[in-house]
Length: 145
Image 1 (cartoon, rainbow, N blue to C red):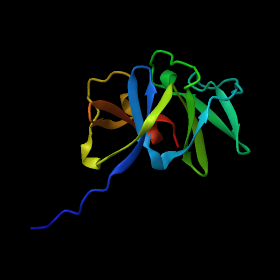
Image 2: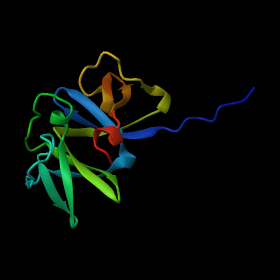
Image 3: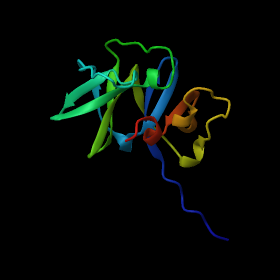
């Protein structure tokens, strides 16, 4: 009988979009910034409110509420831009608020329900930690980084 090696926990950053909590791997997160003034760019999709200058690079900023077809998010002093991606390709994600970091085992991630109508193609799965439910984003599909 073969013994399976123990699973390594995944560290996830959680954030709110409207009433739902989402998460993505901390390994994909470069920084969390306060909201800055964005420069709008003509002829971009409506879910890209603009670009920002970050460490000498211009980054697109995506409004995830618009991207997923959700009601407009709150835009207040707790709103943040989460910089995600790799060193050669980054983007900013506009989120209502960052709620924390947590760890789960890969086996605790369940497939996204098939009855989700909007945004299901951008999801990696669903995870429960304690009494909280998190929607895990697939960054490649949602953002392209």
